[in-house]
Amino acid sequence: MAFKELVFSGVQPTGNLHLGNYLGAITRFVALQERYDCIYCVVDMHAITVWQDPAELPQATREVTAAYIASGIDPKRHIVFNQSQVPEHAELAWIFNCVARLGWLNRMTQFKEKAGKDRENVSVGLYAYPTLMAADILVYRATHVPVGDDQKQHLELSRDIAQKFNNDFATSIAAHGFGEAFFPQPEPLIQGPATRLMSLRDGTKKMSKSDASDYSRINMTDDADTIAQKIRKAKTDPEPLPSEEKGLATRPEADNLVGIYAALAGISKAEVLKEHGGAQFSTFKAALIDLLVAKIGPVGAEMQRLIKDPAHIDAVLADGAQRARVLAAKTMKAVKDIVGFVSR
Ligand code: ATP
Ligand code: MG
Image 1: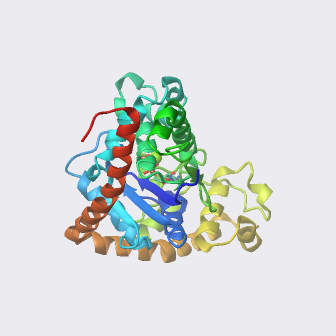
Image 2 (image 1 turned 90 degrees about the horizontal axis):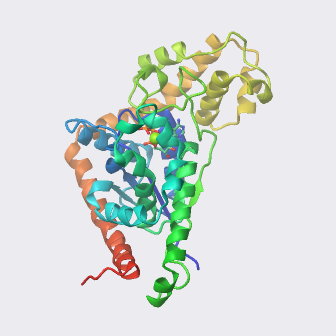
Image 3 (image 1 turned 180 degrees about the horizontal axis):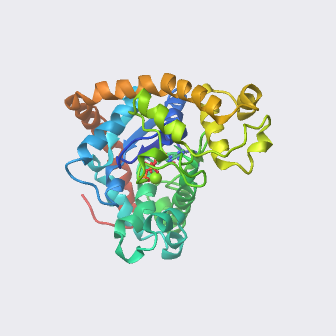
């Protein structure tokens, strides 16, 4: 069965939006607007799977929204909203909790990483995170999901949930006139040169909002001096840059900085090395700082400007939520019929 093509993705309002979110996710969201109808969510219900200060969560939600708009997402042509304003996400997530198997969730590496050694003490929500993510996508029956590399496993789980729902309820799906499958198999779009930016302090760890060290990441709202300081302090090795890409294979920090440069300049790593191969890190870092300030500076400044008008941002979110809810309610009505819940 052919499903209408639709893009869905989200970013958590968990703190400082960073260069990895921007290059790995948000710039991809922007690019997809030309080809598809898109729904971009600020996933505040995911954020509270780890503690969020209620005094700061609204600001963080507005900051992600501002980043979407400042990066070039058009909330009039597409849909931008925060997850908690559309309760159907949580409603469908419950049904998916009853479709997904414990064994599937036990394999999720993000849970293992985020829970760490204190597994008995983390929230049930952190464990169930992937079933809510499946609901986010499938409540719109979305077909394409642009994400960074770290979300690949969760997308595979979403596909498994869609498939199991379609199989378990096949007779009822057909009886209600939805043919052979109610949910599509959402396809991950993990694209571009920066699907996994690494921490500036440790080239083997993902750059993350939740990393305790601010020096591990470039935040979208960092000013020029802060960017310069963080890049100068970024971990490197003592060798000059190689002239060919294979020379980066065993040098994760060098590989990361070259990758960031390539993504920002819109060229390949090989092209970066053609120009900068043989250079000392001090020279390369200076060029990278200039490029970062030129590319990130204007987006950060526009974000700051937008954040000064919270009423405008809240109106964008309310409008998006209203339009999203029409779509989500339609899916939930059908899901309730398929599952066998009595409703009006
Ligand atoms: P947290 O640490 O709270 O999980 P995060 O930095 O991982 O925050 P998310 O809101 O979980 O950010 O992810 C938003 C999007 O950014 C997702 O599509 C994710 O795959 C992508 N993303 C996150 N970190 C990176 C990274 N280091 N490089 C590329 N993409 C990333
Ligand atoms: Mg994350």
